[in-house]
Length: 266
Image (tube, rainbow, N blue to C red; front, side):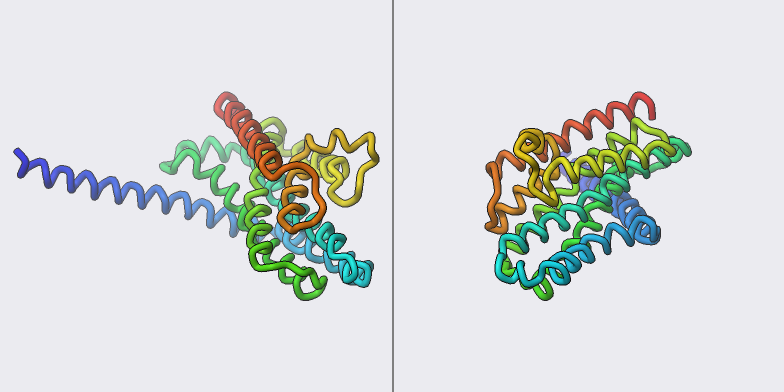
């Protein structure tokens, strides 16, 4: 009896390993082609990859270079603002416009009929946003250390990069939520509206009037900015745990609501 059970358990283990390997490969292949597809779309990749570092160089070197050299906190503020700008775009536009258009074209129904993991579609878009975030952070850190002359330790650079790359997730959740409720034609307008309002009402680029500071914490940009500023040792408000909890809450709530919508309406 024990002699026959041994090969059976060995076969089961082998089959499960093969199945797990195939499952992982399916996720990675879907993520790879989603990233390549968006990278090969100039209207998507060029603004989101190039704009943050170009704005940092414009304001941090050309316009206010001398002021930043004498005030590191100002340089860290600019660095943080434009880094977060780079984290917002890929998630919001990649999910918001992509999901809406692909829903309308019936691509989601086609993918459901394919022998692929159910979560691969959304996970691929999420990883695409994070990979874009990694590229943006690499260019931002290089420009910040060499041209803007920011004084950052290796530990600070690593913490900021990790915080910003993970910080793409709330914006991906916002984009996904918009994408499942809008059509392919209306999605760009809704994404742009939320994108612009969130940038300006969260105090991302400039201090808000006192009467508006109370509403700034409703935006994930505010929490990510304060989290990064705290990591850089610059003046910030609130606690690290509080900001992390707010970002996690936005991500989970909007993702669950979007998935519920997708399950009901496709």
